[in-house]
Every structure is written in structure tokens, then in C-alpha cells.
Length: 220
Length: 220
DNA sequence: GAAGTATGTAACTAGTTAGTTACTTTGTTT
DNA sequence: AAACAAAGTAACTAACTAGTTACATACTTC
Image (cartoon, rainbow over all chains, first blue to last red; front, side):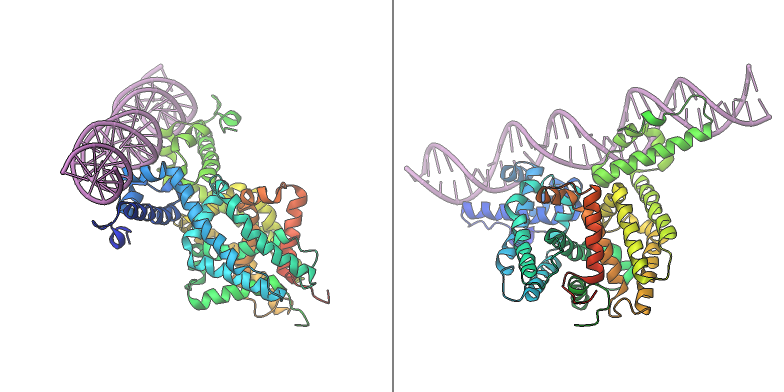
């Protein structure tokens, strides 16, 4: 669905508001198209058309294709930054903390396909553009999750030989890969990976793996 | 390093051999450049120049940019197919089997950066091109690793509630992410992620996670 | 309500890019 | 060695694409 229909500027609007709406429409369309096709695969004309705006104004607001791309990254990374700030706070029970953080992260990814794809493109871009944006946002989430892990170790719930950086990377990987590699996996699994049932099954698998691994343990 | 220097066709070579060499040089250069920049980011002219060959011949041998890309995928997927055939055979000890398979896969990725990047691009392409190649190769590896997991369950070493498809995806994710997200992680970790020490540390972390998870267990 | 400024449009430009064509060189076969 | 075919070259084309320019419209402010 194109962006145009839902919010073309009305004639009576104030100038500032219309401009604000134009900027927002461009950002939404750019998010959609950059996420779908990457920086190289996307066309400025397509973004402008999808946003229902003239190319002239797109350049007026965002300067260049690359600048727009960086803005898109900033805009989307901000979402997960906000998520971390709200949902990653430390409660008493370590298992509870880790579970909540992973669940929050997992369902955030499930609902933000653009985000998943944007960070995947960026990984392939070797973080060339994300580097301009990440220092402000990303490590904050990582650090907050890192605190949860470190707290779990201190309370002797998590094994002390676990490097929290490795754990963070692993949790990210386990969550991301499910969405990231969805289209590759789908034909082999023959199931709708985004159904409520399958999402929950994946989350439970991740939690089981993170907490206990695949091996039979006598206790629990 | 360009491909040209090492193997420009010698004047005395037979026609067939020169042609074979040209095809190979194109495939190597294309692998390098497609892996680096993706399908959209790569230029045919750049590939031709790197291969030290005229564009005319590139089209003569491979037809079109997309066809060449598919050939590159086929060529590289074949490597891991060969790997699976040799290294994923079933021994007696389930833990041993899983360990060997993961170690083999992990170090294969460590040594085949192009492969890592190509499958990552393909995930973002929604498997559009890999789909033409995967049926022959990829699921074979997956199935062989699947057999190892299923065997482990039968022997009561692996928990019976583990879905082997989820386990495969998780192992892939844990290995891939380390290389895939290397450049993003590097500035935060401040270490050379490809050093022998760090590679082995990551592998040990993956094995620990897969077998036992992060939680303290009394036995072992 | 006039002047000024932000928003918007369409046509254009200069450079790029996948793919082609007309032609040359070189190895092979008889 | 002549005839043929495969390998190779350089210049070209048509379509595309990021970014610009000259011009028009409409809101705001004085």
C-alpha cells in the first residue's frame, strides 16, 4: 500500500504541519523501501512516488539518498532504544529478568519486520551507515541486557564462565535468525512461521536453549 | 587483489583450457564482488575487469548478471554440500557427533567469508535466487545434521521435546551471527574476533550453550 | 493586501550501467 | 596453408538514476 492515500496534505493545513507530514511520509516510505531492497536496490524516485511527494522536496528535506538512509536507520533504531529503556529494567528473579527481556526483544522483532531487515542490510554494509547512529542507541540496549546477565551471574543463577557479550550476541542471533532466514526456512518447514503458534514455539525453544541447552538433565 | 595477475591465459594454452580458465576467473571474481556488495551493489564491468576479461566474454559464458549470480551461489553452496557429505557422518557418541558437526560448520564459516556473506544477501533477497540452487544442496546438509540430532534423541542424550528443525536453525544462527555481525560487534568488544583465541572462545560458548544453556547445573 | 518565504512541480542533466554489435586475433582441423 | 570456429576487443546503445534548475503556488506575517 502506498503512503499517499492515507495522509495527503489537506489544503487547509498550516504550513508547518504539512511540512511535518511530508517529512514523516518520506521517512515511512523510505523505511519500507530501504528495508525491502536495501540502499543499492532502492530508487529515490520510487520512495518519492510512494510518499506522494516530489523528488525536489525529498532532497530539500533529507539532502541525499545516503543521508535519508541514515535518517531511516536513526528513526528505526530509536524504536528499540525506547523498548530497552522501558522493558529491560531489573527485577528480583534472574530467570524472570532474562525471560522478560528475551520475550520483549523477540516479539519486538516479530512486529518490526523493517527493523529486522534494516539491521541485516547494515550488517552486510559492515555497519558503514549504522556506525553514525549506533553509538547513541544500540549499545544502551546491549548494556541493559548485559546488566541482566551480570546480575544473574552474581546471584549464582547463571554460570560464572559465561561471557555476557557472547550471551547477548547469542540471544540476538537466536531471535533474529528466525525472522531473518524465514523465507529460506519456510519451504523446508512447510509452516507459517509467523503464526501465533509458531512464534511462541520458537520463543519457547530459545528460552529452553538459553536456560538449559538441548541435553537431558536429571533435575529441574 | 585482482584476479588478473595470477592466471592470465598464456599464449600457448589450448583453446579449451583458456576458456576454462576464463570461466573460472570470472566465477572467482564474481564470488568476491557479489559477496562484498550484493547483487544490486555489484557492477558487471567491475567483475569483468577484476577477472581480466572482456565483458563480451562474460556475457558469452554466463548470459546475464542474474545468471552469473545464480552460478556463484551454486558454486559456493556446493562447497558446504561437499563438507556435509564428508564430515557429518554418524559416529557412536551423540555428544561427539554434535560437537564435530558444529565445529566443522563453524570453522567452515570462519574460512569462507564469501559464503557467509552470500547466504546473508540471499536471506535478504528472500531466497529468490538461492531457491534455484538450494533444493539440490542445502537441505542435504540440514538433513544430515537433523539425523545427528534425531539420533541423539533416540539415545536419550538429547531432550525429546527438542524440535530438531529449531535446533538446526539455532546452531546455524549461533555460528553465522558471529561472522555476520562481526563488524557491528567489533567496536563494542574491542577485540579481533577472527583471532584463533576468539574463534575458539566463540565455538566453546556455542557448544556450552547448545549442550547446557547458561544456567548453573549441579551435576556434570 | 503586499511582500516574502516555504512548499511544490515538471522538465532536465550528467553520469552510470546492463547488455550488444561489428570487428580482430588466435588456435584447430583437414 | 586455408578454412573455420572459438576467444577476445572496443566502441556503442538504450534505459536508468541521483541530483538540479527554473518556475509556480500558497501560506504567513507585517
